[in-house]
Amino acid sequence: MKAIIVNRLGGPEVMRIEEVADPSPGEGEVVVRLHAVGVNPVDTYIRSGHYGDVSHPPYTPGMDGAGIVEAIGSGVKHRKPGQRVYVAWSITGTYAEKVLCREGQTHPLPENLSFSQGAGVGVPYATAYRALFQKGRAVGGENVLIHGASGGVGLAAVQFARAAGLWVIGSAGSDQGGSLVLREGAHAVVDHHREDHLAKAVEQTCGQGFDVIVEMLANQNLGRDLEVVANGGRIVVVGSRGTVEIDPRNTMAHDASIVGMALFNATEAELAGIHAAVVAGLENGTLRPVVSRELPLAEAPEAHRAIMESSTLGKIVLIP
Image (cartoon, rainbow, N blue to C red):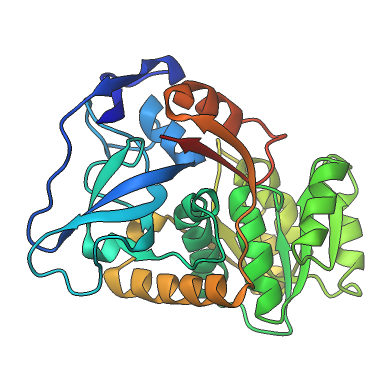
């Protein structure tokens, strides 16, 4: 089969498509023939060596994908050959024609979703759910601000929050992005290029501020988030690309909490809860992955360049 191989850490150009042996399932394992592969910003951080000691070349990148179960090992109870699934993490990496997974890393993909949509589920929707509900403790009736709401995680958070009964304000950087955020369920959207965008966002809460803020770029926004958080509010840091200086008095003034999160830290029980909620939302239509671009598997380097552009809307997927 064909797979992308990273032989050394570095820029997008270190990824090469190569011929490798097909995987074979062991006990409790599943082989999935992938029809689409999800591309995430974290894939680029790992490839470049900027995400800690989590991978060692040579390796195949990728955590997300969707396809058909091709083979199962002994002891597999809930998967069968021919079943449509989405993959959320794997043993061998998803930038490939086939992937080896533990059974629990595969989840049913409803018929109403395409494989490309299924490839956009794993990291974005798990991150959004964990940020909003496991770390942010969001409940219906609260106000939530979702920074970068037109990206993969942002749109997932918008859909989850709206379905849970929150008042949802998103930020985006273009008219196209703003329209997409509104279409996917936000009550209002603000242009994060405007200096007064946070003041405009607070106006949408009748001046109350935000009970939960999902922060995608903490190095730019965290200090200002503390000025618009409500009393008892929670700021969940999902992403950051550098350091930031804040005034701790602003946490004291609002009894505010700043919580960091990484999907890698989720327990098996937390992951089970996440994907139970995700599958239910996919089945009832409240969750709808948005795919903006499809590229051939061999163009993984271009996908990595594109995913880091602020103009990217929704998900980029690779087609094996």
